[in-house]
Image 1 (cartoon, helix red, strand yellow):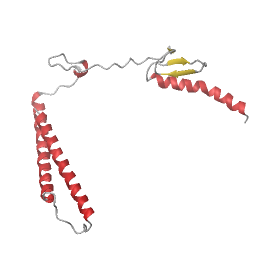
Image 2 (cartoon, rainbow, N blue to C red; image 1 turned 180 degrees about the horizontal axis):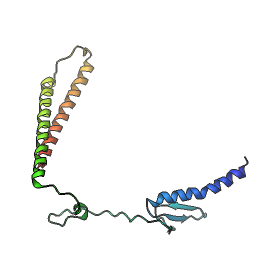
Image 3 (cartoon, rainbow, N blue to C red; image 1 turned 30 degrees about the vertical axis):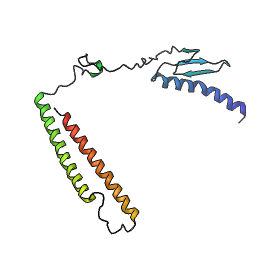
Image 4 (cartoon, helix red, strand yellow; image 1 turned 45 degrees about the vertical axis):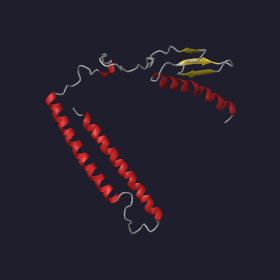
Length: 171
């Protein structure tokens, strides 16, 4: 195959690549055509100086994404994002109370379980001086186990605090 044949095939494939990029860009945002000083054409989704938006048939540009600050004042009207649609199913107050009671019972059970685990860890930890086990003739292994026990105790305490916070949010 000669070099000119490869170049011709590449040039034939270029429109397909551009079309593929445009189809992909259709779902993303507006497509801009940019031409630099050397005459090279670039298609992009970001507006730069000297770029013109393309009017593509059948292409619906995505609306620009604007961030709005959430309402911070109390008593302000709820934003449209926080309002449930009219077709959103409502839960009866009695059913919601039953759900909350179930949730509270589950969290209380988890809290009791975690508290028991913490008590056992602290008992085994023995104020930072747990008893050595048979395979810990090496002091470094003992220190690693003690460090792991400290981490486990801290994690258990964090879990207990998180469970208490979660229980406080239930009405």
